[in-house]
Image 1 (cartoon, rainbow, N blue to C red):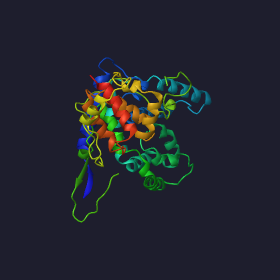
Image 2 (image 1 turned 60 degrees about the vertical axis):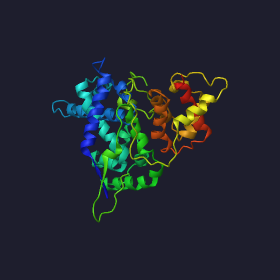
Image 3 (image 1 turned 30 degrees about the horizontal axis):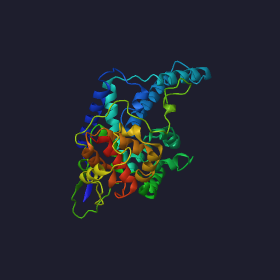
Image 4 (image 1 turned 135 degrees about the vertical axis):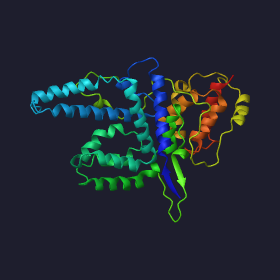
Length: 362
């Protein structure tokens, strides 16, 4: 049996995703800015891949100017003036829908490849780099890599590592084997796409029978400084979408996840919580993403979400978008219980589901 990529599904999914995102953003606006792109969707890697492509186009524009044979672009005054001009230009990103939509579609495809095949994606990045400047290329682009970054980050600070592309590619493959057990779940990464459109991993990775073949396993506000917009792209990915997510009814599960048989039962939870009575239990909560106490946020992050505060924030926002308690518990079961190996009898799970119940209590 072998795993094949369903390129038709990927292409159609990416186009539909981009269309939905643009439908909701451009409903009231004609242009999008760089800062709005950074916060465009809940899938932070998609947002940063759009910015990465704009950075590449920005560099191409600079090279076009420098290729003009009639002027001395090596002159220090010209160089400084040109750098300042390009930096100012980068802070004036202004993109119409017809130009943004294909950028988003391409970014979605790249993000899915990175989530499902980090070795293949990062090796393709090595192919893009100039032979003599691979390390510089990685350093320049590291800020745009938000998923599975540990697969490649170890190379960035190793100046002079390897002398050709092959050495870099082999190092990436070897490092993946060393860190793969600690990488974030593919299903959890792809779940962030679900705020726009659920992604079916089984439809994307198709298993086919092949006789006598082994199984192949695929595993700040805008600053008016002298720096460019692209230099301002930091490592903080805890950004919130600027537009309301499109609700999926009901929320579709991410396919192909590993289940250990544990599951929360919404009816049992409702029966238990409905008879509990103590001060505050009946209080109706507003948005969970805004209502958690500091100690609750700390406990849930540490005990339920592997120390990932961004993942907790995304989960709370997704729950807030559910229509009722049953749908919210279905979402928690599908995306988090088995993926993060929750002990459904634990105090943390009890308090987390209790808050969900309070939010949707009549």
